[in-house]
Image 1 (cartoon, rainbow, N blue to C red):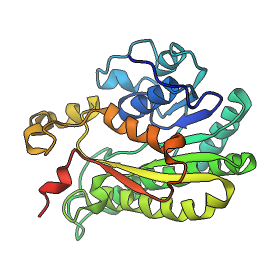
Image 2: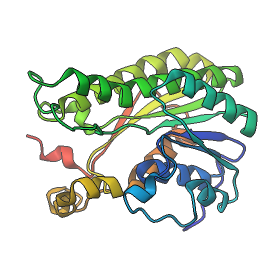
Image 3: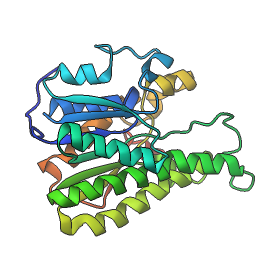
Image 4: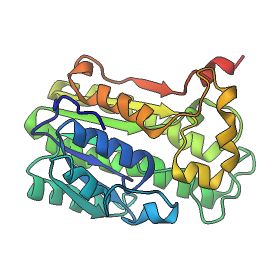
Length: 267
């Protein structure tokens, strides 16, 4: 793993849903940039469920191996009280909270039914997906903003999806991810006077352990993407780096689609 300029040395970052997959990639990228990292997940052993190999016993250990401080916090970010307690602990143990990446979310559901058609999608599914994706983002952003405003500096990156722009399939998920973009733009406007930038990323087909575990057929979709391959977590992590470092000092309220040109296939 090549060394990166420690642009974030002295900063403290929180990445939600970071015990595996994309969140893990974001956490490790921030650690390589010198940030101390708080790793959150609802289950800190999530990598085992999808047979994702770590280079150390935990993601926190992987971060520490890069020369930074790291703590793990198991918390349900759909619960405001747990989010507030997590934020308090980060400030107490790491001294600050300067960067937030709201990665927690996904298409998860106990049944996975009823999210294809807007006309028939079920109430239980919609409420669950909104909680896991949109409400978790709102709770984390609100808690982090209180800390960042005191310091007059902060970087927040919310995680949406290309599903936010679609018109077919995954309706409840798309609604939640579209809501994240709208919320992020409003938050960016409100927090700009306090030195806090808020932006969003909207990944498309990214090959994570869970994505390939749930949908193995996606491995063969590379040739259908203009850049010729399925994305990897590091592709999105590099965009996170852009948004939280000096490269994006004058960028706020934006949503950057990370899709390998997949949008070019839409007529």
